[in-house]
Length: 586
Image (cartoon, rainbow, N blue to C red):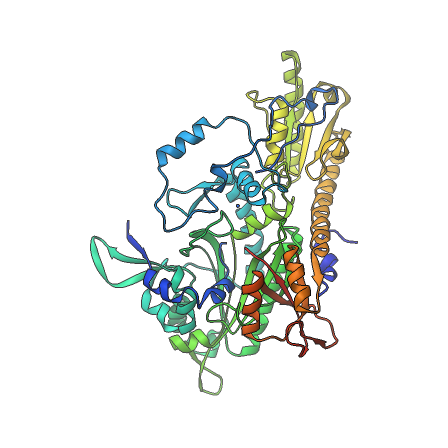
């Protein structure tokens, strides 16, 4: 079994998977309820607490935790972000700063089993991934959190260019008249729009929309660039920020402003557009499996959940640690909906004028939240090695001043050896913290491997290696030679094992929590238990909305992997050619 292609290895497991800003409040009041389902289909940005355990006290200095990681309930700061209303005024900055100053060095983390949302918020705080922005609903992505996003960018950027796309950038401000041109688009997005009405101290002649997505402005420019079939296909991508005025926010998962990439393509025929939409959801699926170790289920969205303005939406759905679904990436076949609205046409080979066929597709910083909630445990983050900003941390240990120089010399040498092998490594040689504190700190940040070097290791020319994914003595191996070839080979093998192990673990968790159902009562029972329900479906849009109203679950997708036999719809009793997956979601 090749560990290099984790997606191919596990795909069979999917069975059947400063301006004046105003919100458009008047539009929201009249349209929020009718278009809730439509809005949910768009890729939106897209929760801080876990219980630390001290390292095993085995008699060695490295096993002594000098910092007490005590469990106690938290009631205040953990819920401030996730439950805040975007419309409310920001909290007093001075009050928040004072609260942070008064916090002790104890990194108290709520166990996942006690309160999953509080755990999530605590991990984000203590792993230093993000912090509160001064405007409610916004967040500041800290360097470590941004480094994870950069790793996502680095991989996908290569894949986008390999598939023929070029990066560019479109303006953040979009004329409101552009949004109005595509009827379902304005209906779907109007409750979430942030509008600029004043600029330079004067009221604008036309209000501007702060980019919620770019299909409209892209089409405006495509109309100027596309004239002939020779100009097609046109395939571009941009890395940008997006603003959607969410009323309930959760860091990384759903914030007022978030980061993403959005690809846009134009084609001469519908077959090319469909091939492109499918190609990009496959890119996302392989990325999720092979890089993030998240076993997503790829499939088609229902009509109710389709992106506003798209003919078809394809999605990758991930099961989080609380068994809720996370829409982790989407690819839309836009058909000719936007090109007809904007008059984006070309002259074909027969001299006839035709509207282009289009796609758009996106992944965002929501995926960072997905990584946290898929792999994290009560000790904090657990990062897949291929996306971890740091793959190895070296913790030198000495008790006497006379031991310090020798330990640090070997530690520095080990760092250089690993760096030369393109392994992302950090030497934590600070003497301001104890080794036990460092162990807990780097476990919280999810570094896959820790190398410990003490005086006895220097004498034996070896190191101790601890795995983040296997806690305690079971994950610790003594006596690994510091000889470069041996050490590098061992570390790389262990990183691959961790990557593979995280995916296996996530697949097992997902499969245990998907229930096959054949009736509506069985579906309701599965959802009540917090699981995903998979069953035959040919119900109407009204039937789908009834399921949502009565259970809180939505159709996450019709998986690409489908059974061959025709079944009976769990809701209507009519023949059903497809199974759908229902789940509660973020």
